[in-house]
Length: 144
Ligand code: DQA
Image (tube, rainbow, N blue to C red):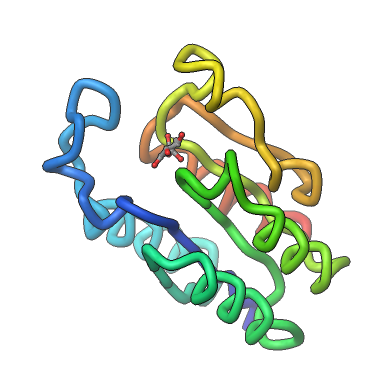
């Protein structure tokens, strides 16, 4: 069975409490439940991982080489800073990854307009809340 890793970066565990005007009221657990529901329909296996630590995210990406078929990644704040996460995604190429952002980062502060990681992903989805993860899952499922 196809398997997709859903990887969330720092502070995504704080959804629900965190800046609800920007991120909404749903929690990380709500995202995971919605993904699981769709994954069942699509007959895809999913694995969830969230970390607030850059090195742990790099370790996780390295560890799934040959173990999953694709990655949905919200690197959160590391999007705008992390050469290490970009290099980890590049290192496991050609595994396809889609970058997801809950908020429309391009309508926010300028420092959020730059993504170090999007260039090594097949695409980026931003601004559609929880649905962005579901779009990414559908798209990756059709590609792998
Ligand atoms: C985010 C956007 C980032 O700029 C921010 O640091 C996050 C969440 C999003 O999903 O909208 O933590 O990745």
